Length: 175
Image 1 (spheres, helix red, strand yellow):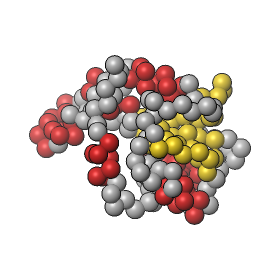
Image 2 (image 1 turned 90 degrees about the horizontal axis):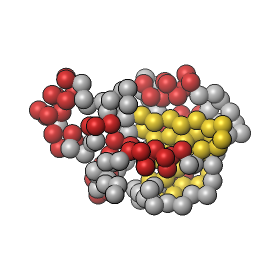
Image 3 (image 1 turned 180 degrees about the vertical axis):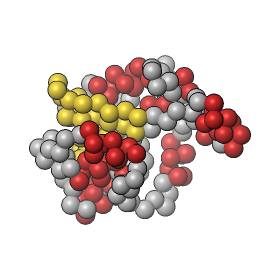
Image 4 (image 1 turned 60 degrees about the horizontal axis):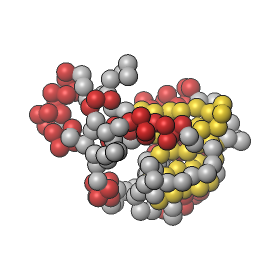
């Protein structure tokens, strides 16, 4: 059985006073997206755990139609409203549990940034990601790596609560 290591109230509390903003050009993940993803105004992207839309704004700048899912309130109203105000094309947004959701569409890009490491059995989570891909689509997954000596030690000392919210077993770059 799949276990989510983080309760939704954690995210709701963190996003209570969120200010929507585009990505920072110095953000390493945004830079990688810009370097490796082709600009295409006829394709769509689906982000799992999409709220507050920071990385969707990268794809929006590249012309993609934006879609996503998150359990955070405002994902169906506030987020698309902000994205549209920024001039981005929006598709479907779902306020639902990704693992329970029945999404009957396929996308050229399916992505999540810092999502999969909050679950105990990532194989199921990754398979659910791939089920949304077009046959020639791309899957983009990122996760932090707290398993290196310095990162682990620092989290153990000053951020133990956050450390417990992550599945360290999957934070192996070779996995």
